[in-house]
Amino acid sequence: MLSYAVRRIALTIPVLLGVATLVFLLIHMVPGDPAQAMLGDSAGGTDVQELRAKLGLDQPLAVQYERYLRGLVAGDLGTSFRYQTPVAHEIGQRLTPTAELAVAAVVVSIVIALPLGVLGALFRGRAIDHGVRRRRWSSHALRAACTAGCSDTSATGTSHHDSQPGTPRSGSTRA
Image 1 (tube, rainbow, N blue to C red):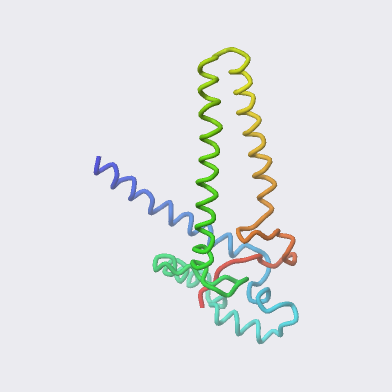
Image 2 (image 1 turned 180 degrees about the horizontal axis):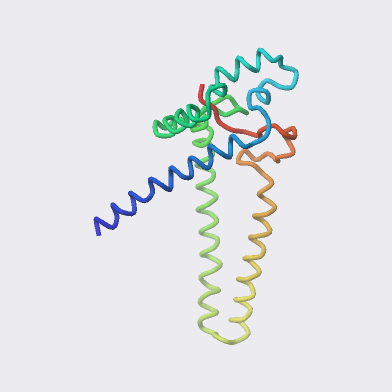
């Protein structure tokens, strides 16, 4: 059993590395210059170049990737473009309300699903069982529709329409 646990934990390392690499690549594929977005369209070229140097965006991609991984290992998630505060702090502020919402959703699900499941089991094959199953499928459809509607909102609760086209909404940097 211990060897199984060690094996499973060891397998998380390549997965985490893959996710970190994918996030790094996706961040760099976003159109627009983060330094230009931070300073605004009226900023001069020298100001943008200075900020790019300060953020390390003028370094080769391999150097940026190494700094990114070192920061992640050290627990440094960078600085929010939007709020100019550490990303870890921003996540920490949102963690408690998110956990409260998740617990409330689980409680509501159990309170609703458990009695319906018992009713469906007691009256198997009858109208009430069919109604419970239809309700389950309709709740899946409703959840999918809500998820699609909510995906228009970023982690900070703002619509992607709040930012200018071609500029990043948020991100992280390491200065």
